[in-house]
Image (cartoon, rainbow, N blue to C red; front, side):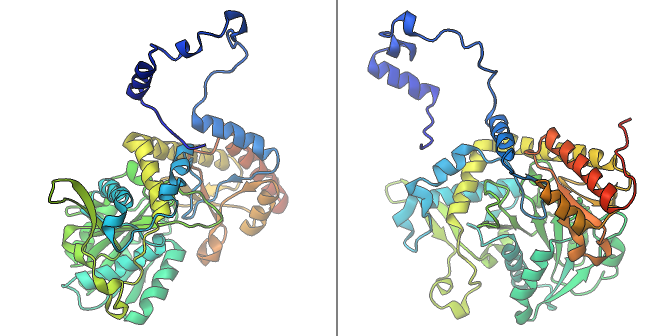
Length: 465
């Protein structure tokens, strides 16, 4: 059923039109003896999230798994209204047409989306999205090469703390354009970018430094120091961020003295379900100085000759549509449906709601870490603060542990050993606001049991202090 909200003012107007003072008067012909009395057996009201969790628990009785995997795709609560509205006929096949005036509704929605993203990131401009976070980073790298007139090298500093899939995608897109990606190691103690290794490149000609926040390990980087270092060495700062985390953390536009130059990331946490891998969408924002280097569609707000508000595509080069060989970029489509959902999602939650989601996710992850650390042999590897993902070391083979957890309907995390051989005993775990204390306790109990069997040692939960 379509979601049709009514404000209090609208309800009053309708009642006045009908000629009654309250909704109860609409049913005054129903005799008292037929009316339902007090509903004493009905439990207290629950929020949409609590009801969803209750139904999820009942569904899990049929085998639904609890998800503690993050690694770039996050299991957040999505209000029912988001996709009830997004899948209406007006939005379901949303795609920006070449004739902008033919679809004012779609253009207005994209304009609202761009406004929200610039507010969230504290940047000047946003485009109307890209394929995903990885391709958005590749476009950010290409933007930096075009836009940094101080650099002639076409070299980019790329930390290993960045999502491995993002690094692979960037390599595939830019390797044939003469762009060199120089890898930065991570600090084995903190989990952040190795500042000593970074200093080894001071004074060298690099186009940009990529700064993830939080990074792939869930660790919070020293973004102020990294941004200022990049600018001091005549580089652009490219931020790769989790949009939900920005509800609590300083936005990239305020990093260091001048802020980041380009911001990108994956928009999936903003209303897109996990959906077996997509579709998702990438966001891309930048400073005003780089706006003409930005690919994709940018929507502008204007007025016509009669003073009526209108929306139109702005700063669009025809080469991106026709003479593609001369285009700034050919990855310029907008993920219209996903952006529609994200816009509705952010509008429903508002800044306060998004902050609550971020705070609840962080709180749940702290609880999960405390539970897991009560298991003998399980420890957190990195010392830096984290958002809602943590790397832990297990005293048993990670692949075998994950396989056994899955057999018990627990998706226990991401095996880091496949991308980081030096972390072959490490597991990346995540807890969003959807994870309940019961789910986390079940995870800890199952993990303790599996480790005691596969690790070949007695491994009991250490009592709480």
